[in-house]
Length: 238
Image (cartoon, rainbow, N blue to C red; front, side, top):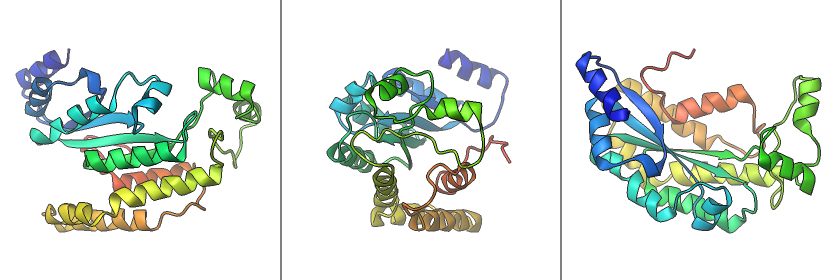
C-alpha cells in the first residue's frame, strides 16, 4: 500500500514534504528509498523501551537488535528520525530507564521525545492498576463525572513516585539534547538565521526544564515539544 501511495504521489506530480509513523518490523531499505523519492523527509519510530525485557513486558513485538538495525536506515537515504520513549511503565526499574536513555543516545536520532507512561481508561493495564492498587483511585471515572481544572493524568507509581518520574523525565531530555556532540552537529547544519533562532529557543527550553513543573499542562508541554522537535511543513495547527 505504501508503494502504491508513493506511486500515486508521483503520478499526480504532487510536490510536498511529509512524515510518517512506523513500526520497525514494517520498514525495509527499499521502502524507505521509495518514500524519500515521494517526498517523505522524516520517520517516527516508537522505540518505547531500552531493553528486551521491557519490550516483552509491554508486548512491543520488537527487540533492541531489530531497533538498532532499522532506526539508522533513514539517515542513509537523507531522512530525519524521531524516536519515542516512554518511562515509568509496569515493572520498570531505574536500571531499565537508564537502558532507555542509553539506547536513545546510541541510536542518535535527530530528535527524541520522552514521556511518562499514562494508563488510559478502558485498557487492560488501567484495570490491572486499579485491581492491584498501583492506581489508588479511578481518576478517569471521577473526571468524567466532574471534569474541571486541576486534573492530573494518572501515572504508574509501582516503583517510582510521580515526582521521581518527573525528575527522570527531565534528566532524559537534558542527557540527550545537551550533549556537546549533538549541539555541535546541529549548529553546523544551520543555514538560515530563522533556523538559528528556533534552535536557540529549543535549547533554552531543554535547559529550563525542571521536575517541579506541572507535568501534564497541555499548553506548556505542547509548546516545549514544538520548540524541541520542529513540526512537519504540512502541519496547519495554530
